[in-house]
Amino acid sequence: MARITDRLVAKTAATATQPGMYADGNGLYLRVAPGGSKSWILRYRHSGRRHDIGLGPYPLIGLADARQRANQRRRLLVDGIDPLSERRAQRAAAAVERIKAITLRQAAESYIDTHAAGWRGGKQAAQWRHSLTAYVFPLLGELPVQAIDTAAVLSVLEPIWKTKTETATRVRERIEAVLNAATAGGSRVQRVSHFPALPYPEIAAFMAELRADTSIAARALEFLILTAARSSEVLQARWDEIDLPSRLWTVPAERAKSGREHRVPLSDAAMAIVQAMAKIRLNDHVFPGRGGAASRTSMFEQLRKLGRADLTTHGFRSTFRDWAAERTNFPAEVAEMALAHAVGDKVEAAYRRGDLFQKRRQIMDAWARFCIAAPTGSAVVPIRRGG
Image (cartoon, rainbow, N blue to C red):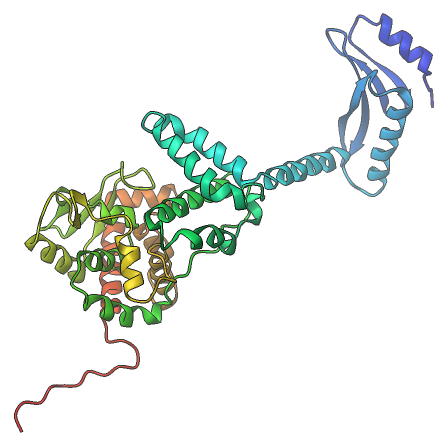
């Protein structure tokens, strides 16, 4: 094996002006690239193919270090491991670990910076930063997003639920948005555990109690459950979005979380709520409040009135999804579409042609029947007349 010396390497590096490969032996080369930069290369064969793997630049990596690095790669070859594939795997793993180490503060700042351009002026970004700085960062800001679980989120929310309910609702939504973005970006390998959802066998009893309340908030919550929609979509629903003859509610793209128009078929039970609200119509909102739509906190307060502050409105979407998976034969994509989740290009194309819409009408009708059925364990007792 011909071996070069430190002096020869230094001389070659200093005088070489043409691209070339200078061999040390056994596959190790000093490569002079166009432009004069120098680096070490190990040339080897694996699975019948020739590969070159870089060992570092010269003079940062000297001859002795280059030989040591080359020997490390050769030992991998003895074990049948491709050094190039091994390095790629190590770099990928290191990149994943770096991503996982991103803190909630860093993830939140990234989320705000990404979305600020689409928000109105700088006001919304300032509101996000203010609420997160005031309530979230002191407790969770320096934790990796991978470590944030439901208990951690509740530690932020519980102190302010009673005194600052609307603020707590906004903070929860913002934490969820940041964590969902972190999951999509790879910073979290698993979503945070969902907030408590009502088990679907209990939904009929819950709905019976809810229907006994005549408030607008109760009707909004009932409508939310029957349509499996998001709370913001329900509370902001407008009369011009409701097509009574077609029994259809169309959530416009600008209000849908997916950014796409979402058509919601209305069951008999959902239509009954719409017709009841039409009789007391106060403004352009289906569920009116003072000067506009019902309050963002109205449905949460309704849950508290029923003694179920342990639940969240979002959890009823999980209740619906669990019921669809465990108690029906509807394809999974139908339930996912009912929740306005993306399920792939082919299904999306079918959805836009309308055939999945008819299946979604069937699943929502079945869900409504399940929700208003006699609660488990109860019996229908006829009322006797006379003696």
